[in-house]
Image 1: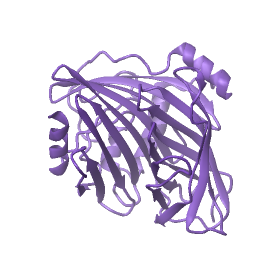
Image 2: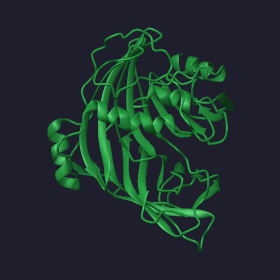
Image 3: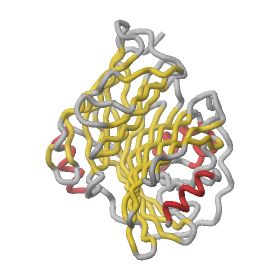
Image 4: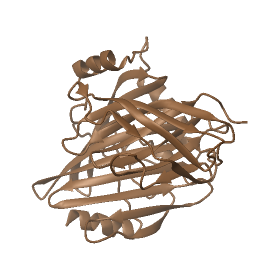
Length: 350
Protein backbone atom coordinates (compact mmCIF):
# COMPACT_ATOMS: atom_id res chain seq x y z
CA UNK A 1 0.00 0.00 0.00
CA UNK A 2 2.83 2.36 0.84
CA UNK A 3 4.51 1.84 -2.55
CA UNK A 4 1.22 2.45 -4.33
CA UNK A 5 0.90 5.67 -2.36
CA UNK A 6 4.43 6.63 -3.46
CA UNK A 7 3.40 6.00 -7.07
CA UNK A 8 0.32 8.15 -6.54
CA UNK A 9 2.47 10.90 -5.09
CA UNK A 10 4.74 10.71 -8.11
CA UNK A 11 1.83 11.05 -10.47
CA UNK A 12 0.78 14.22 -8.68
CA UNK A 13 4.33 15.60 -8.76
CA UNK A 14 5.00 15.03 -5.06
CA UNK A 15 8.13 12.94 -5.48
CA UNK A 16 9.24 12.37 -1.90
CA UNK A 17 12.60 10.68 -2.34
CA UNK A 18 14.97 10.45 0.58
CA UNK A 19 18.15 11.52 -1.20
CA UNK A 20 21.37 10.74 0.60
CA UNK A 21 24.23 13.21 0.14
CA UNK A 22 22.11 15.33 -2.20
CA UNK A 23 22.61 18.89 -0.97
CA UNK A 24 19.56 21.10 -0.61
CA UNK A 25 21.09 23.57 -3.04
CA UNK A 26 20.73 20.95 -5.79
CA UNK A 27 16.99 20.79 -5.27
CA UNK A 28 16.67 24.34 -6.52
CA UNK A 29 19.67 24.45 -8.84
CA UNK A 30 19.11 21.46 -11.14
CA UNK A 31 16.98 21.68 -14.22
CA UNK A 32 17.99 25.29 -14.67
CA UNK A 33 19.60 24.99 -18.09
CA UNK A 34 23.27 25.62 -17.41
CA UNK A 35 23.25 26.19 -13.68
CA UNK A 36 24.26 29.51 -12.24
CA UNK A 37 23.19 28.65 -8.71
CA UNK A 38 20.10 29.32 -6.67
CA UNK A 39 19.39 30.44 -3.16
CA UNK A 40 18.91 27.55 -0.73
CA UNK A 41 15.34 27.19 0.55
CA UNK A 42 14.38 28.08 4.08
CA UNK A 43 14.87 24.95 6.18
CA UNK A 44 12.42 23.72 8.80
CA UNK A 45 13.49 23.28 12.42
CA UNK A 46 16.04 20.58 13.18
CA UNK A 47 14.70 17.31 14.52
CA UNK A 48 17.34 14.96 15.91
CA UNK A 49 17.16 11.32 14.87
CA UNK A 50 19.74 8.72 15.89
CA UNK A 51 21.50 7.64 12.67
CA UNK A 52 22.19 3.97 11.83
CA UNK A 53 25.63 2.40 11.57
CA UNK A 54 27.90 3.22 8.64
CA UNK A 55 27.80 0.82 5.72
CA UNK A 56 31.54 0.20 6.03
CA UNK A 57 33.21 -0.10 9.44
CA UNK A 58 36.66 1.35 10.15
CA UNK A 59 38.16 -2.15 9.93
CA UNK A 60 36.40 -2.86 6.64
CA UNK A 61 37.53 0.52 5.28
CA UNK A 62 41.16 -0.23 6.19
CA UNK A 63 40.91 -3.65 4.54
CA UNK A 64 39.35 -2.06 1.44
CA UNK A 65 42.19 0.44 1.14
CA UNK A 66 44.68 -2.43 1.32
CA UNK A 67 42.84 -4.46 -1.34
CA UNK A 68 42.17 -1.60 -3.71
CA UNK A 69 45.27 0.50 -3.14
CA UNK A 70 43.31 3.48 -1.90
CA UNK A 71 44.89 6.14 0.27
CA UNK A 72 43.82 8.53 2.99
CA UNK A 73 44.69 12.23 2.66
CA UNK A 74 46.64 13.80 5.48
CA UNK A 75 45.03 15.80 6.94
CA UNK A 76 41.54 14.48 6.34
CA UNK A 77 39.12 17.05 4.90
CA UNK A 78 36.87 18.65 7.47
CA UNK A 79 33.06 18.38 7.21
CA UNK A 80 32.93 22.06 6.22
CA UNK A 81 35.46 21.42 3.43
CA UNK A 82 33.35 18.53 2.15
CA UNK A 83 30.22 20.63 2.35
CA UNK A 84 31.77 23.48 0.41
CA UNK A 85 33.07 21.22 -2.36
CA UNK A 86 29.87 19.25 -2.87
CA UNK A 87 27.49 22.19 -2.50
CA UNK A 88 29.56 24.21 -4.98
CA UNK A 89 29.03 21.42 -7.51
CA UNK A 90 25.34 21.23 -6.65
CA UNK A 91 24.82 24.95 -7.16
CA UNK A 92 25.82 24.73 -10.82
CA UNK A 93 24.34 21.28 -11.49
CA UNK A 94 21.88 21.02 -14.35
CA UNK A 95 21.69 17.26 -14.91
CA UNK A 96 20.62 14.29 -12.81
CA UNK A 97 20.49 10.56 -13.53
CA UNK A 98 18.69 8.51 -10.88
CA UNK A 99 17.80 4.82 -10.50
CA UNK A 100 15.99 3.17 -7.61
CA UNK A 101 14.66 -0.28 -6.80
CA UNK A 102 12.35 -1.10 -3.89
CA UNK A 103 11.90 -4.49 -2.28
CA UNK A 104 10.05 -5.76 0.77
CA UNK A 105 6.56 -5.91 2.23
CA UNK A 106 5.42 -7.72 -0.92
CA UNK A 107 6.72 -4.91 -3.17
CA UNK A 108 9.10 -5.14 -6.13
CA UNK A 109 9.30 -1.84 -7.97
CA UNK A 110 11.75 0.46 -9.70
CA UNK A 111 11.91 3.99 -11.05
CA UNK A 112 14.17 6.13 -13.21
CA UNK A 113 14.43 9.92 -13.26
CA UNK A 114 16.39 11.77 -15.94
CA UNK A 115 16.89 15.55 -15.78
CA UNK A 116 18.71 16.99 -18.77
CA UNK A 117 20.40 20.38 -19.18
CA UNK A 118 18.50 23.16 -20.89
CA UNK A 119 15.10 22.03 -19.66
CA UNK A 120 12.88 22.77 -16.68
CA UNK A 121 11.26 19.34 -16.66
CA UNK A 122 12.49 15.88 -15.74
CA UNK A 123 11.21 12.56 -17.08
CA UNK A 124 10.21 9.97 -14.47
CA UNK A 125 9.51 6.35 -15.41
CA UNK A 126 7.91 4.19 -12.73
CA UNK A 127 7.29 0.44 -12.72
CA UNK A 128 5.45 -0.66 -9.59
CA UNK A 129 5.34 -4.30 -10.57
CA UNK A 130 1.69 -4.08 -11.52
CA UNK A 131 2.14 -4.69 -15.23
CA UNK A 132 4.16 -1.86 -16.73
CA UNK A 133 4.92 1.63 -15.58
CA UNK A 134 3.91 5.12 -16.63
CA UNK A 135 6.24 7.79 -17.94
CA UNK A 136 5.55 11.35 -16.89
CA UNK A 137 7.02 14.81 -16.60
CA UNK A 138 7.86 16.39 -13.26
CA UNK A 139 8.81 19.96 -12.52
CA UNK A 140 12.62 20.12 -12.37
CA UNK A 141 14.19 18.65 -9.23
CA UNK A 142 12.72 20.85 -6.55
CA UNK A 143 9.89 18.31 -6.20
CA UNK A 144 12.37 15.96 -4.53
CA UNK A 145 12.80 16.15 -0.77
CA UNK A 146 16.21 15.26 0.62
CA UNK A 147 18.46 15.65 3.63
CA UNK A 148 21.71 17.57 3.74
CA UNK A 149 24.34 15.22 5.08
CA UNK A 150 27.56 17.17 4.64
CA UNK A 151 26.75 19.23 7.70
CA UNK A 152 28.68 17.59 10.57
CA UNK A 153 25.50 16.30 12.16
CA UNK A 154 23.42 19.47 12.00
CA UNK A 155 20.42 17.59 10.62
CA UNK A 156 17.93 19.45 8.44
CA UNK A 157 14.31 18.70 7.64
CA UNK A 158 14.16 16.03 10.32
CA UNK A 159 17.42 14.34 9.33
CA UNK A 160 20.54 13.78 11.38
CA UNK A 161 23.60 12.78 9.42
CA UNK A 162 27.25 11.81 9.83
CA UNK A 163 30.04 11.26 7.32
CA UNK A 164 33.30 9.31 7.20
CA UNK A 165 36.06 9.64 4.63
CA UNK A 166 36.92 6.14 3.29
CA UNK A 167 39.67 6.59 0.67
CA UNK A 168 40.93 8.30 -2.43
CA UNK A 169 41.14 5.87 -5.35
CA UNK A 170 42.08 6.65 -8.96
CA UNK A 171 42.13 10.35 -8.06
CA UNK A 172 38.54 10.19 -6.80
CA UNK A 173 37.77 10.91 -3.10
CA UNK A 174 35.18 8.53 -1.65
CA UNK A 175 33.07 9.16 1.44
CA UNK A 176 30.23 7.38 3.21
CA UNK A 177 27.35 8.91 5.08
CA UNK A 178 24.54 7.82 7.35
CA UNK A 179 21.39 9.58 8.40
CA UNK A 180 17.93 9.06 9.85
CA UNK A 181 14.76 11.06 9.38
CA UNK A 182 11.00 10.98 9.36
CA UNK A 183 8.75 11.34 6.36
CA UNK A 184 5.01 11.50 6.88
CA UNK A 185 5.50 9.99 10.35
CA UNK A 186 7.64 7.04 9.17
CA UNK A 187 11.27 6.75 10.29
CA UNK A 188 13.70 6.15 7.42
CA UNK A 189 17.35 5.19 7.74
CA UNK A 190 19.88 6.12 5.06
CA UNK A 191 23.34 4.73 4.40
CA UNK A 192 25.30 5.86 1.37
CA UNK A 193 28.67 5.69 -0.35
CA UNK A 194 29.99 7.78 -3.20
CA UNK A 195 32.54 10.16 -4.64
CA UNK A 196 32.90 13.54 -6.22
CA UNK A 197 35.12 15.21 -8.78
CA UNK A 198 35.36 18.84 -9.90
CA UNK A 199 32.08 18.99 -11.83
CA UNK A 200 30.05 15.97 -10.71
CA UNK A 201 29.02 13.70 -7.85
CA UNK A 202 28.01 10.01 -7.84
CA UNK A 203 26.37 8.08 -5.00
CA UNK A 204 24.72 4.79 -4.07
CA UNK A 205 22.30 4.55 -1.17
CA UNK A 206 20.55 1.97 0.95
CA UNK A 207 17.37 3.20 2.61
CA UNK A 208 15.13 1.18 4.92
CA UNK A 209 11.85 1.85 6.70
CA UNK A 210 9.28 -0.07 8.73
CA UNK A 211 5.87 0.11 7.08
CA UNK A 212 3.09 -1.56 9.08
CA UNK A 213 5.72 -3.63 10.94
CA UNK A 214 7.25 -4.83 7.66
CA UNK A 215 10.65 -3.67 6.46
CA UNK A 216 10.96 -2.18 3.00
CA UNK A 217 14.34 -1.46 1.39
CA UNK A 218 15.16 1.08 -1.32
CA UNK A 219 18.46 0.87 -3.22
CA UNK A 220 19.28 4.04 -5.17
CA UNK A 221 22.01 5.46 -7.39
CA UNK A 222 22.62 9.07 -8.41
CA UNK A 223 24.88 11.00 -10.75
CA UNK A 224 24.55 14.77 -10.92
CA UNK A 225 26.67 17.71 -11.99
CA UNK A 226 27.35 20.56 -14.38
CA UNK A 227 26.74 18.87 -17.72
CA UNK A 228 28.80 19.60 -20.83
CA UNK A 229 25.74 19.62 -23.03
CA UNK A 230 27.73 18.36 -26.04
CA UNK A 231 29.33 15.20 -27.36
CA UNK A 232 33.09 14.54 -27.59
CA UNK A 233 35.03 15.32 -30.74
CA UNK A 234 38.50 14.07 -29.74
CA UNK A 235 39.51 10.52 -28.78
CA UNK A 236 39.51 10.19 -25.00
CA UNK A 237 39.15 7.89 -22.01
CA UNK A 238 37.48 8.75 -18.72
CA UNK A 239 39.06 6.81 -15.84
CA UNK A 240 37.51 6.65 -12.40
CA UNK A 241 35.51 4.59 -9.94
CA UNK A 242 32.23 2.69 -9.84
CA UNK A 243 30.32 1.94 -6.65
CA UNK A 244 27.31 -0.29 -6.19
CA UNK A 245 24.93 -1.81 -3.69
CA UNK A 246 24.05 -5.50 -4.01
CA UNK A 247 20.29 -5.92 -4.24
CA UNK A 248 20.39 -9.21 -2.34
CA UNK A 249 21.67 -8.17 1.07
CA UNK A 250 22.87 -4.61 0.53
CA UNK A 251 26.64 -5.23 0.38
CA UNK A 252 28.74 -2.37 -1.02
CA UNK A 253 31.01 -2.99 -4.02
CA UNK A 254 33.64 -0.79 -5.62
CA UNK A 255 35.73 -1.11 -8.76
CA UNK A 256 37.47 0.69 -11.58
CA UNK A 257 35.39 2.48 -14.21
CA UNK A 258 36.56 3.28 -17.73
CA UNK A 259 34.59 5.01 -20.48
CA UNK A 260 36.01 5.51 -23.99
CA UNK A 261 35.03 7.49 -27.08
CA UNK A 262 36.65 7.03 -30.47
CA UNK A 263 36.26 9.09 -33.65
CA UNK A 264 35.93 5.83 -35.58
CA UNK A 265 32.62 5.10 -33.82
CA UNK A 266 31.34 8.61 -33.18
CA UNK A 267 27.81 7.75 -32.12
CA UNK A 268 28.62 5.43 -29.20
CA UNK A 269 30.83 5.09 -26.14
CA UNK A 270 32.34 1.89 -24.75
CA UNK A 271 34.06 0.87 -21.58
CA UNK A 272 34.06 -1.49 -18.64
CA UNK A 273 33.85 -1.85 -14.88
CA UNK A 274 36.51 -4.20 -13.49
CA UNK A 275 38.66 -5.04 -10.45
CA UNK A 276 35.43 -5.06 -8.45
CA UNK A 277 35.65 -5.78 -4.73
CA UNK A 278 32.93 -6.46 -2.19
CA UNK A 279 33.91 -3.98 0.53
CA UNK A 280 31.43 -5.43 3.02
CA UNK A 281 32.78 -8.98 2.81
CA UNK A 282 36.38 -8.11 1.92
CA UNK A 283 36.41 -10.40 -1.14
CA UNK A 284 36.36 -10.15 -4.93
CA UNK A 285 32.90 -9.51 -6.30
CA UNK A 286 31.32 -12.39 -8.21
CA UNK A 287 31.16 -10.24 -11.36
CA UNK A 288 34.80 -9.14 -11.63
CA UNK A 289 34.45 -7.74 -15.18
CA UNK A 290 31.45 -5.88 -16.59
CA UNK A 291 32.10 -4.90 -20.21
CA UNK A 292 29.82 -2.30 -21.74
CA UNK A 293 28.09 -2.73 -25.06
CA UNK A 294 28.34 0.16 -27.48
CA UNK A 295 26.30 2.74 -25.57
CA UNK A 296 24.52 5.21 -27.89
CA UNK A 297 25.08 8.93 -27.52
CA UNK A 298 21.62 10.48 -27.43
CA UNK A 299 22.55 14.14 -27.92
CA UNK A 300 23.50 16.93 -25.60
CA UNK A 301 26.41 15.02 -24.11
CA UNK A 302 24.21 12.19 -22.83
CA UNK A 303 24.53 8.43 -23.28
CA UNK A 304 22.07 5.70 -22.35
CA UNK A 305 21.05 2.13 -23.11
CA UNK A 306 18.69 -0.50 -21.73
CA UNK A 307 21.04 -3.20 -23.06
CA UNK A 308 24.25 -1.90 -21.54
CA UNK A 309 26.39 -4.98 -20.86
CA UNK A 310 27.85 -7.71 -23.06
CA UNK A 311 27.00 -10.34 -20.45
CA UNK A 312 23.67 -10.27 -18.61
CA UNK A 313 21.02 -7.59 -18.66
CA UNK A 314 21.27 -4.04 -17.42
CA UNK A 315 20.78 -0.37 -18.21
CA UNK A 316 23.00 2.70 -18.04
CA UNK A 317 22.29 6.46 -18.09
CA UNK A 318 25.00 9.11 -17.99
CA UNK A 319 26.40 12.50 -18.92
CA UNK A 320 29.64 14.21 -19.78
CA UNK A 321 30.40 16.94 -17.24
CA UNK A 322 32.46 20.13 -17.39
CA UNK A 323 32.79 22.68 -20.20
CA UNK A 324 35.52 20.60 -21.86
CA UNK A 325 34.02 17.19 -21.05
CA UNK A 326 36.59 16.78 -18.29
CA UNK A 327 34.41 14.18 -16.55
CA UNK A 328 31.85 11.48 -17.26
CA UNK A 329 29.44 9.84 -14.87
CA UNK A 330 26.16 8.03 -14.60
CA UNK A 331 24.10 5.27 -13.04
CA UNK A 332 23.57 1.63 -13.96
CA UNK A 333 21.25 -1.19 -12.97
CA UNK A 334 21.95 -4.91 -13.45
CA UNK A 335 20.29 -8.08 -12.22
CA UNK A 336 22.49 -8.11 -9.11
CA UNK A 337 23.54 -4.54 -8.32
CA UNK A 338 22.49 -0.93 -8.71
CA UNK A 339 25.38 1.51 -9.04
CA UNK A 340 26.92 4.82 -10.04
CA UNK A 341 30.26 5.90 -11.46
CA UNK A 342 32.41 8.90 -12.25
CA UNK A 343 35.77 9.50 -13.91
CA UNK A 344 38.19 12.08 -15.30
CA UNK A 345 39.23 12.48 -18.95
CA UNK A 346 42.78 11.82 -20.02
CA UNK A 347 42.26 14.34 -22.86
CA UNK A 348 40.01 17.39 -22.36
CA UNK A 349 37.93 18.30 -25.39
CA UNK A 350 38.53 21.53 -27.35
